[in-house]
Image 1 (cartoon, one colour):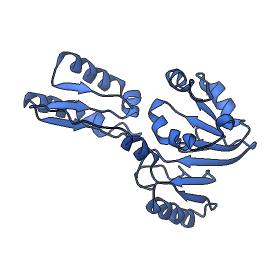
Image 2 (spheres, one colour; image 1 turned 180 degrees about the vertical axis):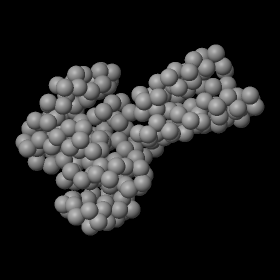
Image 3 (spheres, rainbow, N blue to C red; image 1 turned 90 degrees about the vertical axis):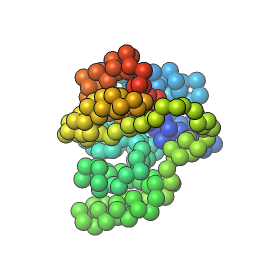
Image 4 (cartoon, rainbow, N blue to C red; image 1 turned 45 degrees about the vertical axis):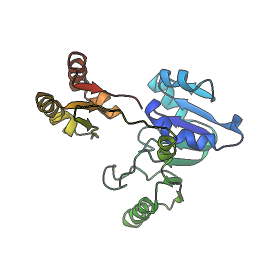
Length: 230
């Protein structure tokens, strides 16, 4: 049983699945982040491949019964291996399947672990519209909620008014984070609001210059803090 992991931010979406498997000796995690390898190696069997070409070769030719992943667009990022019996997708978002994803994002999976009936209904309708192969659907719920509700959260008292900004992202480079985030934060700071910015991991990766400017601002300005904890 293989679990492919893009990084630390994806752990919270699939570790709950692994922890429910009684015999973990047959479970292997593959990651492309070394810090994630260090984080998980004590409790899980995990392999790290930092080189993109080597990682792609491994994934293209992997031999397994079940391949779990939270990565969309199977067949685009890496090929389906003929030596793998079933590819299983786990959602890392609660969003609509046809609202924020590419048209072919889910075409090549054999099994979909859906967050609810709304996603199953959408995907079945897409099968009819685009004449796709039928898949197996499991209504698993959203695993991240188990991770989140297990934590005890104590509210912090603070006299300052706080605003949380947690933007999403898109492939076009014209997202809220790219166009408005910096300007809006400065307006809030000028009006004595305390800002907590939780950028999407893709914001950090794809909009490095903007993120660095905001990071530098957070160092010198008490009113802005940036939280990148997964």
